[in-house]
Length: 120
Image (tube, rainbow, N blue to C red; front, top):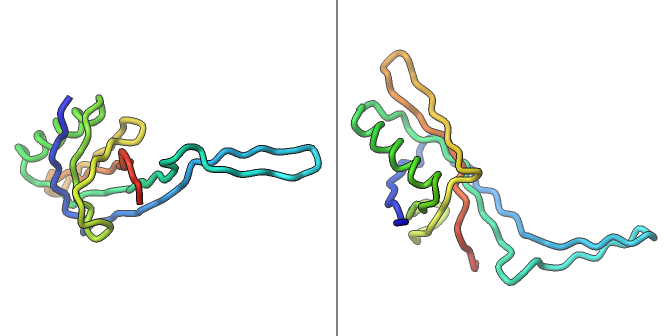
C-alpha cells in the first residue's frame, strides 16, 4: 500500500478535535484513577468538507483517492493552518460522503481524517 498525496482547499470547513486515550479504574467508594494508555495517547481528528469540485475528471480522480485511503492507504496532507508539516492521515471508519449540487453538477466531499501518529 502506498501513501496518497492529497491537496485540499480548506476554505470551506474544517474542525479539529483532539482526544487522549486514557485508562480509567473505578472503585466502589466512587474514587476513579485515570492514567495514560501508552506513550502516544494523543489522537487528532479533522472533519473536512471540500470546496465544490466541478470538473468531472477531478471528481473521478478524487473518488479514486478516497477509495484507496478507505481500503488501507494513507493520505499525506498539510492541513494549514492547523499544521505546516505534511502528515499521514487515514479516513475515520473508512467512510466518506459526497453531495451533488444539482445547479451545476459540482460535488462536495465530507470526511473525517484521523492523524496516523502524533507525538506533539
